[in-house]
Image (cartoon, rainbow, N blue to C red):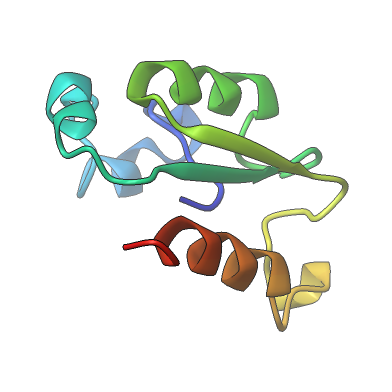
Length: 95
């Protein structure tokens, strides 16, 4: 997951409520027993870095912090995302 969150963002509440209504079923996510990785930027303007780290414990994910990557958009310098490709390959290379 990139720029992961599990809280309703009040400043965009109307938009978020169209697809996010009350959290996730963390027990069900953990039961899937698939590799879970969360990649977040230290300076994402929308996703609180420390709150996002909290999601890691709830779902048993690995956390990767990327320094000053904004929201991983092209205007933040992310036209390509080689770290994401690397993480995906590592997670599934033995599968």
